[in-house]
Figure 1 (tube, rainbow, N blue to C red):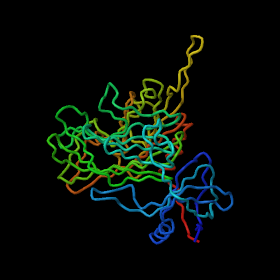
Figure 2: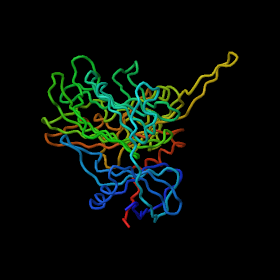
Figure 3: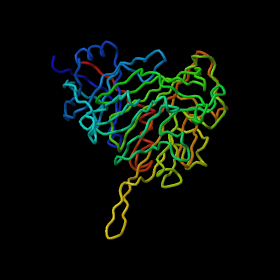
Figure 4: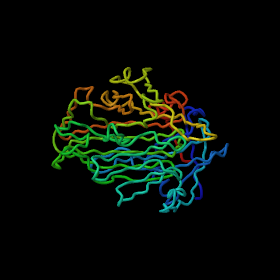
Length: 413
């Protein structure tokens, strides 16, 4: 059997404004196993019957949720729709092609330049995972035990510019994309001063790449200043193969009270996750902060419940000198965080500062939070990087896509 034929039932066609995008097709286990056996070690792509559009595909059994003991499962086919919509009833031919055997080439300017899809380069001796998308650096997961907490930096967007900032001089403990709280059973796991608790990367529960997405799920122990366990966290970051002008990643934070009751104190110093935006696009420079509820700026947004918050502004692209005159070129870009509609209020109430840090999940606004022994908390968010401002970058439209994903059904013909 060379090819397989699938019939896709799509409730409504996508508009060009929402492309490119990722579509998840849920499968029953029997269909998944049949496709898995047929695919073997090959990569998959689909060809649409009428238009001849090629669609990258990825079978996946690893969910974006986990417990400290391991990963949850799903049975799904993910499809990367780039340039064309499909009619409501589409027939596609599923084909195989040899999986790339390319690997990073050290001591090159860009060691990942020949790597397709989303590639995860684990460098254990450097305590980091470098993530590239279509041969270009996107981010790094940095987990050295010499740092107070694991984090991600940079997050590359339009024109190769990062949208976040690591360890600015006003807040050295702000690490791009990070998690923390300054009162966990009375212990501090936020500022990284002497004699404080730490977040320790224990192991990878999942680390995978592919033509449609890559995923890192890590087990992290939150420990006090003497190394005593306070709680365990599974942290999942799923990175999709999308262009820098319109790119999103999904974040799942799960906190487990495995060592007794956990009391998160009433403090503003905490977030699940926290983002520190590039200084150039914060509210003190070129940035405009907008929220889904129509509010603008720190004074209006701080403490409100809303679906998303966006920072957009101008990033310096280049400086050109001619005849003693300086010309500066800028790229307009932004970064938004979305709160999943299934989140409780404490994961949708915003800490926002003009100078650049923001988080959708801060226990201060709920007066703290108690997690009884054996219980857990799950919070889901999406981080969206875009070109232009919140309107031009279609932040509201992209949030609707997140909140109400396209429900596609599949039939194996």
